[in-house]
Length: 427
Ligand code: UD1
Image 1 (cartoon, rainbow, N blue to C red):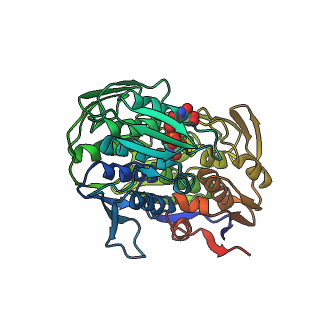
Image 2: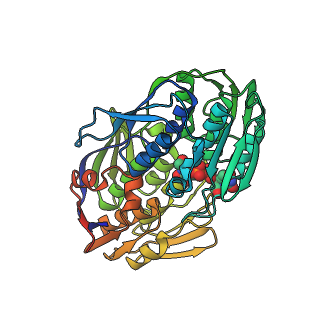
Image 3: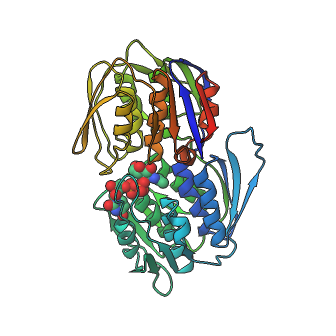
């Protein structure tokens, strides 16, 4: 298994290209199951999760065809064609690798009238139930049964029927699943308290390009008029706001000035506000966002919340930055109950962090020192890379497969802006 080695202390300078958004791509790929015509997705990131999702789609009978990508290019184009669905079951072996597999439930149910998906179970950042997905689909007439670790959903004869879905809590995945089901349901569906994440806007726009009728895109109230069928489309995946935010934290901790090519300010306001408060300047210019550390890093507080709030997927990376800021910061996690696995690892690098319930008090220290570290999820792993960029000595981050799930060629992108980082085989 590979590991990442970083020798800290080098400022970053140059350009980092921002890839297509993983979380948007993982919602756009299952949308291909809604039509028998091809859906071509441009700007898909090259990530392990995207490959896994491709295998899942193949397993349902869809063909996936990747075009025109040379190994040196970032991103790729994939055409998914689900001419005929040959299996409506998403098996345990794939779902356990990737929770986002649950997103085939809505499309399969809408198109085939039934779907059986392995229950995803817990994961490193918490319990993560799927009750909201199921309640939403039930509101469209689905019958849901849980047996032997699988969710079996069945539509009424004649297919799903539009309904009113009021989410008691904001859920990105549940909103996506219900939206994809509603576009092929008979009649109108009103989704209230929908998640407003930019990735949902991306999905909704792609569905519209496929012939869906959706009003209220980007708001908490989505009104869908179901269509008899959708058609194929070509759609470019939005830039990854979490990847961009992560590299902005990297520049913040290492110093220097970097252009995040392709990054969009309008979908990163809360992250940028936190960075600006920390003394990291983020300026929009043609082609992306220019990030520069002003003088010393200043402590700043942040509380995670559904979009447009501060993203839970940025909490660990901001914490790495706060470890060396002047003063004390309080970071509060309100989305997932167990998302501080990076804390003991950062502490091994000399960070001063006290977790109390959902909040972490981070007292800035003058410097971090390198150590062998590892984390159990993607963003926690990235926070260790960020810490490593500023730490004295050589940091070794193990379990690199977490990073490969969400950061396209991380070490290449960081090397290109002057970081001393390499991927080596585990000894
Ligand atoms: C998505 C993102 C993930 C991000 C999260 C929150 C993808 C592939 N993943 O995950 O990176 O951290 O949004 O922005 O897009 N919940 C329930 N019942 C449900 C569903 C969710 O209680 O049926 C809870 C969850 O446990 C969590 C909260 O709702 O506490 C938000 O989760 P949700 O927005 O659904 O996250 P995901 O879609 O799984």
